[in-house]
Amino acid sequence: MKFWDAPRSSFPYSFDEVVAAFWDRYPNSHAKHILSEDVLDRKVVGNTIVTKKLIVKQGSSILKRVPRWISRMTDIRVVPVIEESIYDKATKRLTTYTRNVSHLSLFQLHERCIYKPTENHQETTPFLTDVLRTVNVSIDCGRMSSVYEKVLMMGFKKSINNTTKGMFEKLEEKFGLKHSPNSEKMKLIKEKIIKSSTNLVTHVKCEEETVV
Image (cartoon, rainbow, N blue to C red; front, side, top):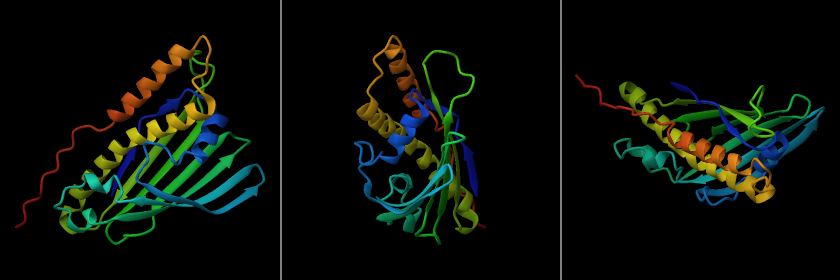
């Protein structure tokens, strides 16, 4: 099993704006692989809103990055995932859990994200919202499992660039670029965030183990 804690990233929008964009982030021009999104359950419990969604992805952009030598995984055409989110109005936290619910005998990929207002940031913008992302990947393929997990994790890291662009697209669509004295500075922050998500992938050397 491989674990990854992504470097903290921030959106130059308020927490409530980020939450609104998150709940309505599909469709967007950077998520054309999303076939459908359906709310299975939503309930209000005290200060929290708990939502469960079924999201169906076409051909999984992550799996497309896996080389052909991981045979059956590259033949997967549709990947349904369950996304559970907990919005807490009192603590200003949005916590999401996403996991695949098919092809479990081939791989399991779980992601947790926490969205929260940035604490103690410099006054470069009126507000920022942090995203803390944790991912774990598990593949049961014998001696080569570790190599396959590295490749799949690398594909996931690359996909975060489009995830970030898609969120910015919805934020700008809903709330604009914040026309204020800080507008130009916010544009620079956006570019920096997208660039950092592109550079999240470091070189991963995957060598096949020698089979005796």
